[in-house]
Length: 330
Image 1: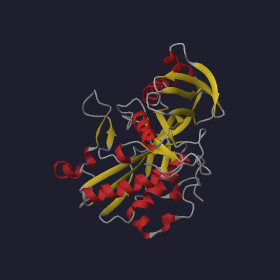
Image 2: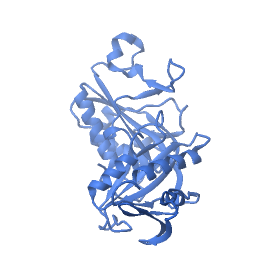
Image 3: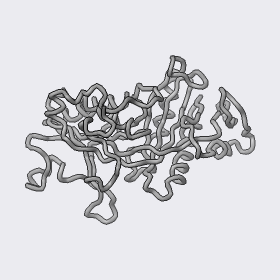
C-alpha cells in the first residue's frame, strides 16, 4: 500500500544524477514512455481505522486499471496517519488520497469524469462504515458532487460545516455521512510506463514490484494495475475491428519462435512486466519513474528496462528514461 502522504510537488527529475551509475547506463534503454494528458480529480477519504479506510478506498478504485475497458483509471496516492506533521486530516483520523483519471482526448471528458466520481464515491465511500469524504484538489472549475450525492438523504439531508469544511450531512442507518460540497478537477498525466525484461518470470515480477513500490512512495502519483504491475502490456489496435487494444505480440516471449524476425524480444528474455504511472503533473510522473528505475536496477536476472511508445503518435508528454534527456533535468 502506498506509504506516501505528501502533497507537494517533487524536485526536478534527475536531481542528484543517479543515472550516472554503470547499472543505469547498462540496463536502461535510451528511450521514452509516451504519456498523455488526462483530466483528474483528487479526494481525501477518512475513517475510524485502517480496516474501514482501505475497504472504502479499494472498492472506490476497483476496476480502474485501464481506460481500455474501465470508466477511469484510479488508485490510492498515499495514506495519512491524520495527526503527524504533514499528514494531518480535517477530522484527525487516518485517511487516504485517491486519484481518478480520464483521457483528456475524450470530448466528453468533463461529464464523464463527473459520472465516474458520482458512481464510485456514492456507492463505495458513502456505503462504508465510519467514512467521511473531502475534496483534495482546490481548483476552479469544480463539480457540485456533494449536493448530488446528498440526494440519497431523501429530503433529510442538510447543509453543514464540519472540520472547517462546508458540506452536506446525510442521515444513514449507521449514523451520519459527511462530505464536502465541491470537488475540483484539473489537468493531469496518464500512461507513464516502464517495462522490465528478465530471464525469468520471478525476476521480472520482482523488478516490477520493487519499481511499483518506489513509484507509490513518490508524491502525487498512482499506479493503477493489480499490485501496481501489469503482465499484459498492450498495443493500440487489433486485428479484430471491435477491439481498441490487444496483446503486444512482438514483445510476447512465448511468440518469439513463431514470429521469427518480427519478434522484438531479446534473446534470453522469458518474461516482461510493466508498471503504469499516472499523476498530477509530468514532473511528478518523471520523479516516480526515476525512483522506480533505481529501485529495480540490482534485481538478479534483470536484462533490460525499457518503455512503451508509439513514436510520439499517441501522447505528447514524454518521460525520458535517461533523466539528462528530460528538459527539466538539472
